[in-house]
Image (cartoon, helix red, strand yellow):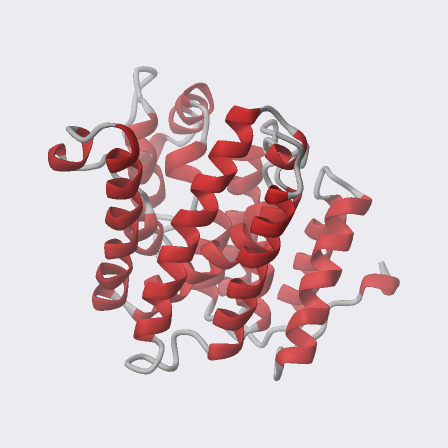
Length: 277
């Protein structure tokens, strides 16, 4: 895979945009994520992590594939393309191995099919889970002694919980706005709990925005177009919140990435407006 050799660092805006283009090109070339998988393994091998840490990361890679390997995304991509891009992004920024492993596993609790969680739980005796295990038990799988343990608190921190009653009681546009504000407010909690958790959450948001223009709703039904419009509004509010925090915690995220997110949201909005109603 020499023609897609991973860069070893992201020192500036030019390299960052080149990486973005390269990752999306790889996704287009192989919607199943094989090229991204090779790209990630190469980037991980270029790190100076101790062998045991690399083993933990590769174990997380295997679990991520077991959890999401059969899933697809709404735009036709394999599900694994998203956690792979998040992990590559973190790896090339010089993130520690536990954060890169968390990048691979960050959606495992929320989005793994329940049947897969049961299978994984019953095949891992040290978790002490039985065949009745549900998606809510996924964190026990991660927190059990073993290679995922160091990543588990970070995954736990970015896992979306249920909306509180005061949000669920709303209706119509007020409900949508309440959900968006609740998720934006959680950004402050990520930053307060851990710089690594905040870094992980932004990497997740960054990739979601990176792929927004390719969303199925651009060529879909009016309902899908409305869902995309809601996503644009949600991410715009979240990025504004990140922007307000960037000067308080500059190591967490840089202005260049914030600016790129603003550009992408505007591009998604323009593309959506161009869809015939």
